[in-house]
Image 1: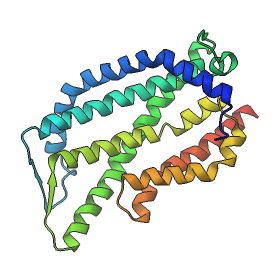
Image 2: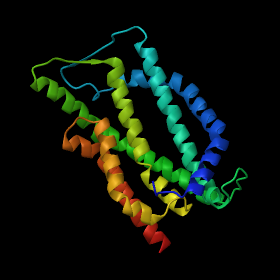
Image 3: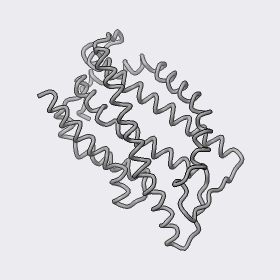
Image 4: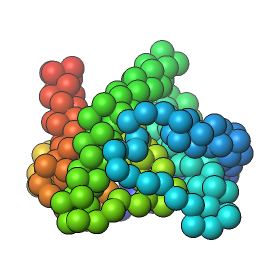
Length: 246
């Protein structure tokens, strides 16, 4: 698509193939640890105030619903850890992937820089969770309940859909707030050129808004609340990269 050269794509695919088992192991570890933690998370959502708007009734339609919900949350935890592993891997090996484009990848990034990437990733993830908790989730839950009430319908939410929707927003926000780290790592590792991001800014904006439309009600305010932060963070990443490299 004109974003990466063919040899760069080949080097990336070879590197991902080499790291495939490691990524799967990280996902499996997160999944296994996340399954028992999911039970605690579900109980916390049920007992906490603010997640069930007034007039909404949460029901269970099938006996296995809680187990399926635990599997879903565990999968999100595993996927989140795998995304973190990929970002850290690119920050450590990104430049060598392009320079060598082979299976023998050397370690070329300092330990301090890698730790700084990890710290930034965790901070941005925490900010994403805070944004979802204080702004995104309260607004969307209230919007959905009021929309049903305005139509004269009783709001009855299925347990799996309700908590799955909430955890999905938390997960999407935590991952979406990693845009600055991903952009800076790709630029500093020379996996992608700054001009390519600038020239394809419109495509990236459309993609962010499209992702927002997939997980939010179909109105402009909700769409911007989900996709808007990714656009702002993308521009901040470009500003930071220009200022630090100039």
